[in-house]
Amino acid sequence: MPAFDPHTELATLLSEYRARANAVSQDLARSHSPDFAEQALQRQNDEVLEALLAEAKAAMRQVGLAQLRLAEGQYGLCLRCGEPINPARLQALPASEFCLACAEQQDRGH
Image (cartoon, rainbow, N blue to C red; front, side):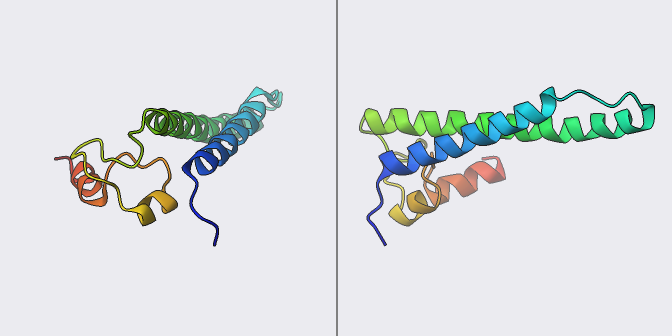
């Protein structure tokens, strides 16, 4: 397995999220059927697509912030406690903002 390179991993992730956002945006831009029943179904699908687009945009922001931390020499440090984030966690989730303990606390709402 090649060594983990955060620059490459983050750039790859950003590219994937951009491609996903572009594909969803293209789907949302298509015209709707003149048939009312078909339109209702298409509108429901649009709601799902809008949620997917929002998710992709949020992920792009998270990756952008990780790239900024990398440029500032703060990449890999937990934003909550300041301790280093486990390298295995960074390999699995390159845009991680928190160490595992702080992420679990965040998820519990503390």
